[in-house]
Length: 167
Image 1 (cartoon, rainbow, N blue to C red):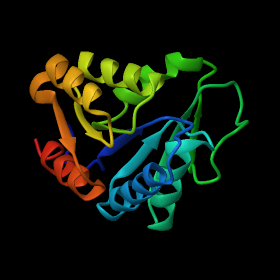
Image 2 (image 1 turned 180 degrees about the horizontal axis):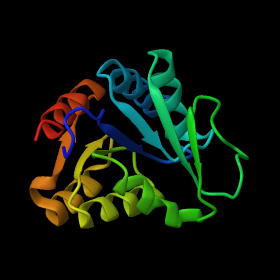
Image 3 (image 1 turned 120 degrees about the vertical axis):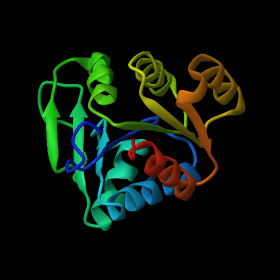
C-alpha cells in the first residue's frame, strides 16, 4: 500500500439479488471478518443482496462501511452504510468501486459483478473470488492470472486479503 498507516479498503462486489441464503450468510460473515481485521468495507451501498449483507455484517462487528451509490440521491441505501458516495452514474460507478478498493472480493456472481471484476483486473487490482461458479473462476483466472485467487470460505478470503494488503 502507498501509505502503511492508512486502513485498507476491501471492496466487496456481488449480486443485488442472490437467490440463496447461503450466499447472504457468507457475505455477512465476510463483512464481520473485514471489520475485525480493522479494514474498511466498500460496496455498492444499496439495501439489496450481497451489498446489504456485507454492510450488515461489517456494522455488527463495529466496522466502517462505504457505499458507492448508482443514483442521484440516497434512495435504496443500506441502513448499514456509514459513508454514502452519491454518484448519479448508474453502472459507471463500478469503476469507482474498484479503483477505490485495495483488494476486490467477488462474493457470488452476476453481470454487474463480472463487470467489476473485469475493471479491477484492468486496473491491476488483486481479485478474490468467493462462491463464484466454476466457469467464472476459470474465465477470470485465465484473464487475470496471478491477480486472481479463489477462496472457499470468508475466512480464506480474508486470509488472502491479509497477504495482498501487506505489499
